[in-house]
Length: 464
Image: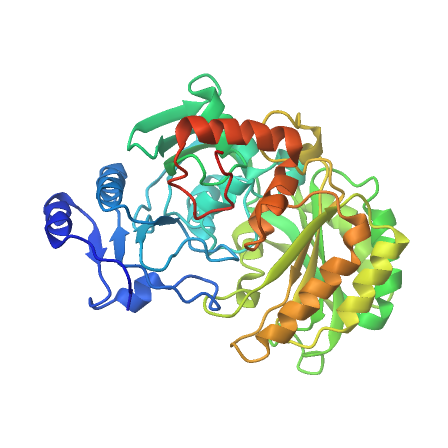
């Protein structure tokens, strides 16, 4: 039960009379279901959940929150690592019912409401052989992913998710509905492309679509962990001059217990290179042949497949309800020291669901002017996602300690950090995510559009 917050019943009743969605309180059936988020280690109890169906509901919920001086948090897909999309005592504005998607295949654009998940968007756009560059787990929310930047399988070909963003509809802290684009309200449009939910609630996104699939050459190739130094050394050289169409993620973990994994491999420490070629399948087959032929792989799942199938590849490794903890950093290069540290900590993995992911950057991401958006990691060589995970609370402390130790060992090589891979780590880390100049510009925007820091439950940029 939520404690410590009393909301005027008359105000709630007045809201209910015009609210098209659903208002859920702690005593209501379904409260526990609706308060939960993807990360099972997060256990918070809002005083009121406003499940909105559109911009009018969002504005009405904001008016109630302001009149009652409530702490407000906003949930799109609820997929953030630190669980900032739910709070204790205050109001949760849930956008999950806002599922509208309108694809224009001739103009190659899509209008997408803030409750849409990546898999839902892919389903609509792939019908026409088109896609928005997006993430790698299909039950991630489009909204949170986009507002932080948006890393994914086709970013080296087409850029980040924000690089295909044409406009947004955003509701400010004062309840004003604003359309923002390059030529209209350009300052907040710059800010929402990487600056998260600091400036308002985005209720709708307009994206440019790009040709992808419907079939791609994609999937992981696995080697035993004892081969990791040689595999990562080969990998470094192989991708040094690879085409933009090729995107890879190097993964170290214990082989997962999935039907596609041979039983005698399950639980063994492995290194994998997962790849996706965003171009013709036959070109992808040629480009990926050196990877598939290197050394002695113990499992090769890299093959032609529907893009929507490849997008689901990591879903079984990150289901709802497990306990997740992440530490992250960007590094300039995969040098010998970084490889040695990575292999050393990969061998120490104990949880069957803990993993290390090294995201290859570069390509179109790097070539876009770094000043164009608030996102600040365009010059990174690799983005590290160090996941210390457990299926329940048991053993979770140990996994978090492993992740922290690995991240600390990489400290001499840290450059920046991807804001969507932050936990609640404090203002200095948020500043590091944007760099000093962009952080100052974001603070100025915050002072203009949210001077009281009404939207505070995020990777917060304080206005003062």
